[in-house]
Image (tube, rainbow, N blue to C red; front, side):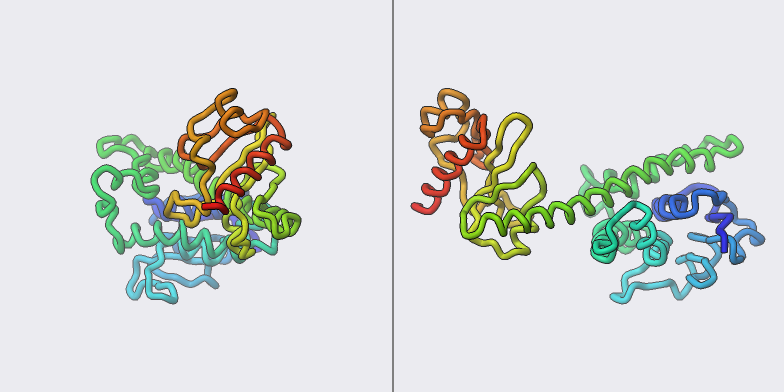
Length: 308
């Protein structure tokens, strides 16, 4: 079976069918995207996928609307938009098309659904109110920003809505692909962190081959003994702390108070380490000129942390 047409409604657009189009146009790049409410187009056939229009949800028939009653719901009772329906059906294939390793597909599919797709579904269905974020942020949610790319009310030039939709599509694609790439990168980083934790043994300092997200891997491994992380950073080496959670700036241990805000000769004098170059005033990162120097700084930081 060949999909020749991707069909959604004409007129103004919302984030859900725009983001659905991101998924479908990657999977079916040769298919023509048709925006219409013509009943002959929004009637299912085997060579078309219909979404956000048509008054029915039937994955087998390739129609994915959510405006009908009863409307399609997730297992927990939260409503789907067309984006959620399309992601549930085609998201895994989309991830494979994005070269996500098969071993990570299910986890990334669930994570993206929870953190990206579900909020779009809820906003589209009016299940959450973006104004609750406060006047400063209510206009900055992704659905609102994407929908701001629609034509203005008095632009009635023929084809204006379709042109606006097609212009908005690469913008929406950039957000989706960036999120997927970052999630896939976190899984790659986690594997590298696990290897580094094994190498560190019972040591208090984790050495990584480059800067990367590391806390998820540290927590997954149960490596509660680790206090600091070092890694190369360009021509220098960085020494960083490990936060205790996502929603806090508290660390397992801070860098020495005597180093705070110092640079170069002043930091070398305070630390006693030749090659010490910088310590942030917040005491969560320091920089040294070499691996040898950063290891010495890490050793001092560990000794002070354990003495407190």
